[in-house]
Length: 375
Image (cartoon, rainbow, N blue to C red; front, side, top):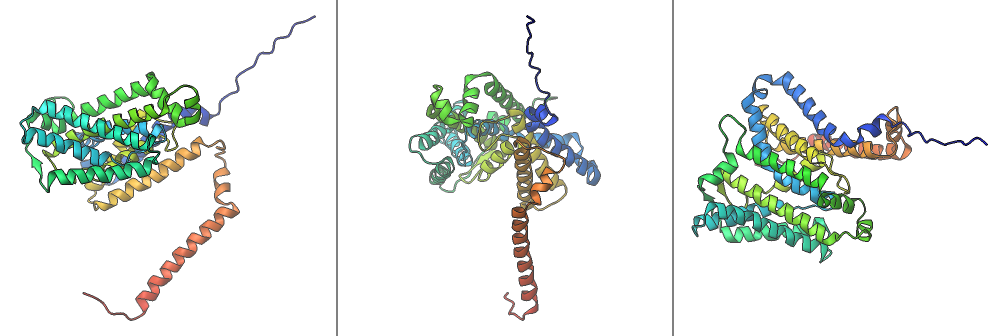
């Protein structure tokens, strides 16, 4: 009797399946390339200068450590809206210790990082033990930390720090990269190692994929999440030190919009807001992309507020693209347009079109009817 052996040949992966692990890098890199092509056409002389690329790196450097921490938090289906106030409060306490109590600046820097780690751990306790949703809990703690900073500062601006703090914020090694850029790159590399080579990183992704399954597998989910928030706080404290050194001053209202910038960079870099997927290299590319957008708007003399518009558009496009690439149905030959043209979506588009038409009609009516102008 002949013996037969069934050999299973692995199914050939589609192009989309092969590039899926690298999508988090392709997205921001593609947008960076498109931005560079645009600037090459409109303002090549000012944008493509070595000194300008150094400015971009300096702008991005302060956000790199915090992007690392936020990647771990978001990978576990969390979010932290308090990092701006943590950075300000940590740097403010450091400034008071150094300037009013004569502490060594090295000790002051460690105090700032430790204060940040403590505040982050408190965030984690609020989320895990009080069962407050991450969004609400960290937003409430942001108000608390900012309020404490305002009470401590009493309207003061603390300035003129020791040389080591200024070096951390804006120093440079002669003939090499600026110090803040080196700090930022070091944290990105360390974050990449922790995410991909340690249990802490694997647990973070496991919790983000399925918290219940992670709990059943023996992972201490609450403790892991507290650790992630504490790491986020420590890196926010480091960011506060870098900000104080960069400006050579700190006040209670500093870093007000820092949290949204960091979250935007991490999301643009491909870390899923639904957890389970994270990329340190993607976060690095996201930080660089947003810094380049800010730099380009300044070179083009675009008003500051349009930077927020540009960043928002980038976020929406990025998240939409990642959601589509991660979906099970990736028929690029027409399925996307078929979905857009479905009866339900056409009804939604008609509804939005009707609202826009009504708004235009109201503007026309307002211009046609007589009214009293106020001065």
